[in-house]
Image (cartoon, rainbow, N blue to C red; front, side):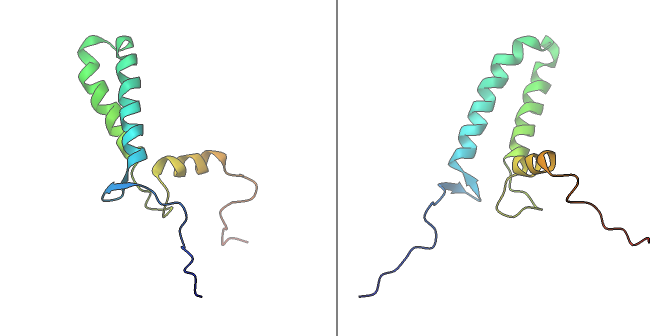
Amino acid sequence: MKFIMPKELSAKISMRRGFMFVDLLVLVGAFIVTSFLDSLVYFPLRIPYYIFSMASVFYLILNSRDNLGKKNYHSIYYFIKRDRETYHKISNKY
């Protein structure tokens, strides 16, 4: 008997072009948080506030160009949590 073992045990639910269902939930959650906080924003600036907030969240949930398979918010997290003593630039000057 030959058993076929699946290579990927946890599949992500993709909607279209790499946009995951979880990303949609994050986008909706960010819109809810943005609408709760809009009372703190000066009234004539509310439309730019919504545009900036949604554009920022949309950028964060896009796939990262540098870290394949990760999102931009993962890249920012890795940048903040990196060990500054371990990873450093190698200079050619001796």
